[in-house]
Image (cartoon, rainbow, N blue to C red; front, side):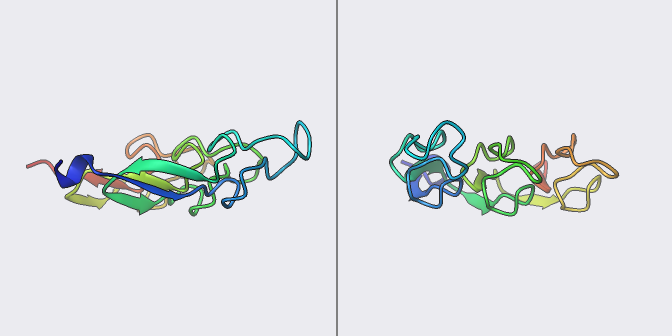
Length: 113
């Protein structure tokens, strides 16, 4: 297995590894919709902290899962990369709270070989 396809298990960012819905939207016993109640998620390497949600797994200003990292708090990045020239690495569209259209909210874009 090569490095690019290696998978690792990390703590679920959305529920902070507790396995329950952190906002108790359906009930205080509802399972986390990201990890399915396991408290952990599997991601492909190489990974970086999601700049759009700051690694929380929560869409900024809401109680929804981040649509950039899908609530995992990290994103898979195909290296080598450079900072996104459109959002200056913030992952956000300038003058908007939406994910950057160029880097898809990751804050970086791949360097073409």
